[in-house]
Image (cartoon, rainbow over all chains, first blue to last red; front, top):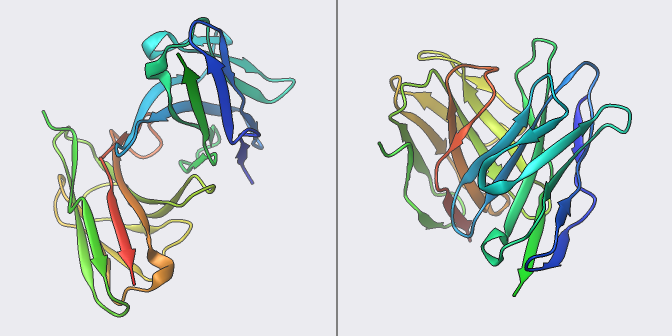
Length: 114
Length: 113
């Protein structure tokens, strides 16, 4: 069965510093991987996805993520954090085997301090 | 272009009461979904609709029913609310089932006393 893990409940980083939000996954076939962001009292917004091709995926708001097949990871990164990046981040995975169900991680709260 | 809209934004129910959560999308998407979000558990799929006229159970369907009224609208009904159904409910849509990006509504925060 497919699963996704976000090992950190919260990540704290100072504004201007690089940030990383971790995600690992388990699927039986090749994965489709996603990052979504949720601001307070809002629905989830799509940030980026990996389907195939280049392992480094660039998305909205300067975020990027690196697909690492050997480590089954898809960590979200940004070179320089902004206070406005503070939000709840969800990693999600879907199997590329004809199924459609997307499994979401429990979420990681990012707090960027000025 | 409003995207995905949900009503109401907030609701408080007593145990045993019923209610319907409404969802509509204006992106001409074929597939729609209902999720619930609970602290520390991510999003869990309640029901989904691959296309107009079809609905299927997700991970946690017990206590819920759905109706795909037309291509735009997908409602979620709680027939007899229980405290365990206290949660934030999100509706989402995508171009088709299995197509990657889902678009989410703003959510309904439901409390069952």
